[in-house]
Picture (cartoon, rainbow, N blue to C red):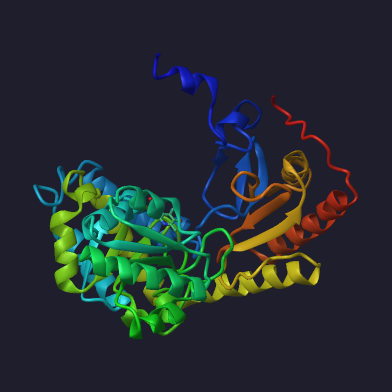
Length: 413
Ligand code: PMP
């Protein structure tokens, strides 16, 4: 049998919609300067799907630094992996500044968050070790688990009683295997927007012996008094053993990092396969990230404005009777009832007739009969953007409730 045969027969759970969705719901092209208004298929839309929380993507100082650094160094520099030939003062400077900011002894830069965190899990855990993790952890963590040859126990999302139950099992198993326990959760869960219960989890450290790895992709820059993340927000940053974030969200860039105790980070530096065997982050990205971090730290007005917009949007949605679940972060889900045809018809109506562009989540990512619209407010959205969006949702929900949406006739297919 040709190994490709099955790929031609079935495109996979998302791919099976490709013929109808490609270019519109999947792989859409947003054009123009990154911001709350961009062009989609030649028409201006209000954009709610970019994790550009602080609006740094198009900040004039960021744009100037990116340009200067690219002109000076090009995208090739430095060549090679950090360990072999790809290190620089700039890389080390960024690590130093990140460590200071998130209040950890040391930091290692990662080329991408996805392989970075998978690979960190791989480097830390031997076959004797046990991983305990939240059921809603990001795919990059799940892929890290796939690399783990030992036992793993999942706890129900943010359910501390279940977390404790799994820790009890893990502790017994770790004892019999002669290994340790790594607990993995997130600072802010990217779909529902609820914070991980980090304080309650760290309280369990009194009774169970485990180390805590927190993926704070959505919390870094958005949460905590100084924007240092969800650990700062919940006052337990010192109890997080390994703090991870990507630069792909509030930093509006590429790359990621893990911070922790010096000796452990140094171990990772010499043992993370994704970094040892991959090219180092290009200098323009590193220098651009230094500038972004400077702005994130020194311009609290950006985070204030973000939260002002978060409150306006979330308050407005609640006032209009929308269910936004238990978010306590900028991530704003809107939970609606309906099936895929209705969901796509409503999304199409929002895009074409109200000029609102946002992401939609349907089965199989969530149970059948549910629709989630996911809105990401940013510091650069205006009151007008928010008001137009609230009105559009109000009108389209009414149509959904009155069963006016049938099958989406996507204009271009
Ligand atoms: N963790 C979480 C929670 C994420 O949302 C993402 C996606 N950005 C990643 C890890 C992967 O990060 P990156 O885009 O830098 O690969």
